[in-house]
Image (cartoon, rainbow, N blue to C red; front, side, top):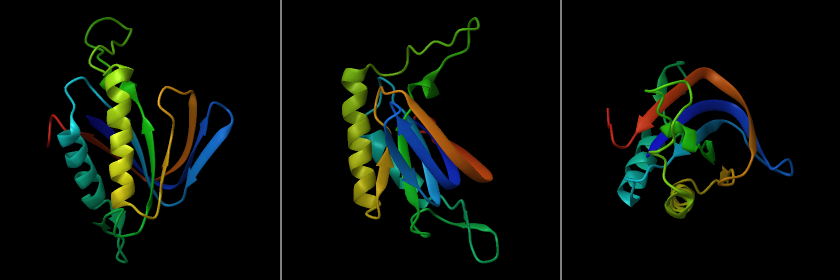
Length: 150
C-alpha cells in the first residue's frame, strides 16, 4: 500500500462535480492499493501517518504530528500511485488492485482513520471523477510505501 501525504493549510475534493468535501490544516492522503496489500499494511500506514512529525512547533521546527496539532485528514483513493513506467511511455497499472479487492481495503483504511482521528476524516469516492484543490504548506510532501518501509 502506498500513500502520498501532503501537508496542507486547506484542501477540498469535488466528487463527480456535485459533492464537495473540505478540510483545514492537516494532510491530504492519496492512497494506492495493490494486490498484495492487507490489513497489516493499513495498520502500519495509519500509525506512520499519525506519528510522522512534519508540522511546525512554536520554534518553526518540524516536530509535531497531525495528531498533535489536531489536524484534519482528506483521504482519496489513487490507483495511479502504482504506475509502472519501466517500459514505453504509457504507464502500466498492473500492480494496482482490482476494485473487488481495493474497495474493501480502502473502506477499511477510512474506518481505521476515523477511529484514530475522531475530529473527522473527509474522503473522496473510490472510482469517481475527482478534482482536488489544495494549498500545500511548506511545501511538504512525503511518500510512504508499506512494502518498502524506509
